Amino acid sequence: MRKLLLLILLVAFKLSCWSQVLVSYDKSKDLDMSQYKTFKIVKLDIKTMPDFEPKQEGISQFMQQVTNKMRELGYEPVEDNADLLINFGVTIQEQAQTRETSIRDAPRYIGQRNYHWESEEIVIGYYKEGTVTMDLVDSQKDEMIWQAVVRGVVQDKEKGRAKRIARSVEKLFKKFPE
Image (tube, rainbow, N blue to C red; front, side, top):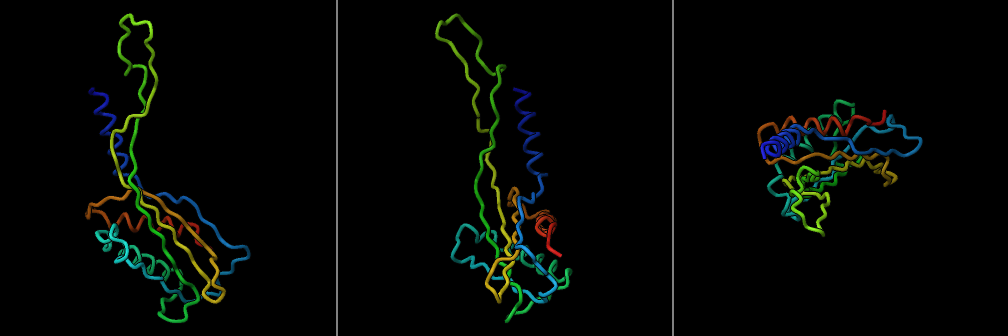
């Protein structure tokens, strides 16, 4: 029992420290980013997504961080006639954290003829996993030219939110085309 408690605490600690992971990125062939100077972030309409309303502040901070990063890279935000449109997709799913039983978890054999034991997955907790997809779209051609996907554990804690958002934005821009 003590080992199980230690395992649960260790896994919970790992999940609380787990940073966002860059899952994938994709870019169009022969992409020349020097032809783009301006960008516009396509706004998410949170009002149509009630599950995201409590997270509106975090999403706004995320978009501000992306705007800051684009400025660092030399692109200017504009409201009309932007060269690039930045589109976001956000999903949050509840995931079950499991562990597999081992032979040590099996009951003692007490002489029954039809006794057998199988390993199985046991749910030990739940967490929320968020995925953010960022698409860069050439506004003239109406064509996606680059995409990055980042995934990580969503925490409702306000403490450290800015750091978590900054890390996820850094991961999104890790393989940004030059």
